[in-house]
Length: 88
Image: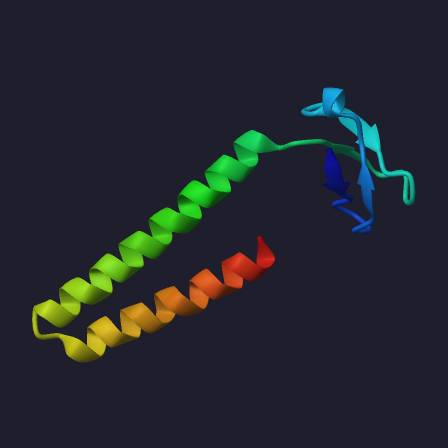
């Protein structure tokens, strides 16, 4: 299983049997966990939920004759989605 250290970014492999377990990075020795599946699922659920909500509000505003507000909502949603996609 491929892992990136959360502290120093070192890329290395750990046995698949360690998924969900704790280990130390061979480069910086920082203790961390492998395979944070539940955290990743929560992150992606919030990410896509935010994208869908923001887009829906923007499109609804445009359809209801609030074009400037709708465009602003779509732009803000796009910018935030890009930021969180790069950070996450």
